[in-house]
Length: 230
Image 1: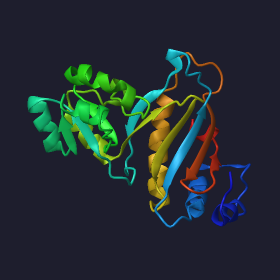
Image 2: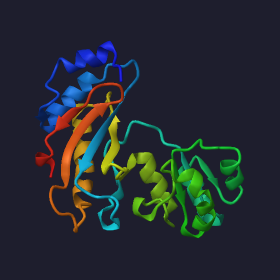
Image 3: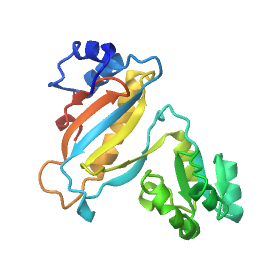
């Protein structure tokens, strides 16, 4: 993969093989974000889990204290009073069965998070092939299958993010924008790591957090000392 001048210039300002403490890493990552847009800062956390075993699957959600810096479009599947509640809470789209053909046949995906009341999961399940691969399927562990749609919508709008293992047993999540202060990014990162540390599977043998890298959208990553955040 070819990298541009900014990327190569950033690599010369620090030691890519070294692990830094959190505050040093965040300061460096902000310097590495040189694009003309407000880059997202992401955490990439390599775990010692084996996601092929159900008891070592990690999945959950956490509300970042300073949000993600991104406005999130929320779709809620609900009926009756719960639909009214979702609308009042600020959901961008609210509906039921009538949304199925729009998503299935017309390819409508103008939303970032899907919330559903439990009674609607039979309907939403028909969209599994569309929503599943995109990570949009509502899930009780992530708090997106719930009767408390007001709390779900409020949390998502406030900066709730979902974390889960990918096929390589790595967690990829945003912790904010390059325009955030170092303190805001540090707060968000610590809140995320507290949640991930609590989610450590009881059956796991050996090291839980193998490596942590913080990186801006277009710039190189900086390694964070995993030992200091466990």
